Length: 183
Image (cartoon, rainbow, N blue to C red; front, side):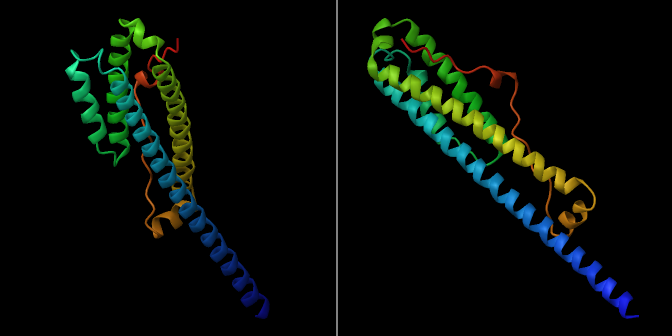
C-alpha cells in the first residue's frame, strides 16, 4: 500500500511540475510576444517620424504636393492596436514613401542633400529593424500556438484560458522595400 501511495504522489508531483512548466512557458511567450509587438510599434513610429522629417527637409520642393503632407499627418495619427492595424499602417507608409521618393527623383538638389541622404539611410535601417521584429513576433507566435495546440499542453492552455495568437500577415508588397536611394 505504501508503494502505491508513494507512486501516486510521485505521479501527481510530475503532473503538477509539468503543468507549472507549461504555464510558465506560456506566460513567458505571451510576454515576449507583447514585447515584440510593442517594439514593432516603436519602430513604426520611428519610421513615421523619419518620413515626417524627410518631408520637412524637402518641403520647399514639395510645395505643390499637399497630398504628401496630408498623408504624413494621417500616418502619424494612425492607431496601431492590432496586427491588422500594423499591416494597414505599413501599407500606408510604403505607399507614401514610394510617392515621396518618386517626387524626389525629379529634384536632383534634394538627392544631393546630406540631410536627405542620412534620413534615407535611417529609413532603410528602420525598415530592416521592422522586418527583424516581424520575423521574431511571428516566430514567437508560432511557438506559442504550437504549445496551445499539441497534447497534453493544450489541456493546460485551455484550463488557464490561453488562446492562439494572430500572426502578422502582410501581402506580397511586404517583400519589396520602399526605394531608398542614397546618392
